[in-house]
Image 1 (cartoon, rainbow, N blue to C red):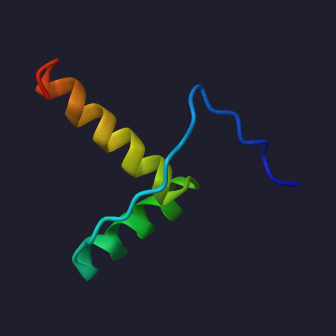
Image 2 (tube, helix red, strand yellow):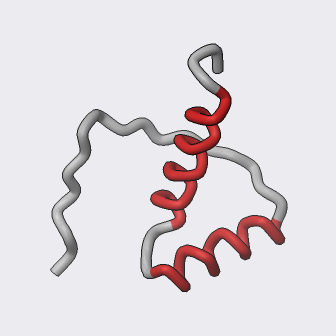
Image 3 (cartoon, one colour):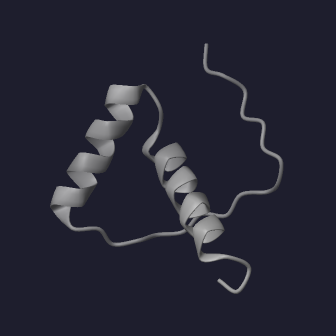
Length: 56
């Protein structure tokens, strides 16, 4: 049975274009960690925005 989806805030779908090689690496990294590519992307973008600071 799948885990229930519990989010702190609403989600919005968006699309990005990635080079094929990056897409493959992303999905392999997600599979290696038993998480979704979406989770890795969300974490990566959140981390980047935190490092950029409040003006980002």
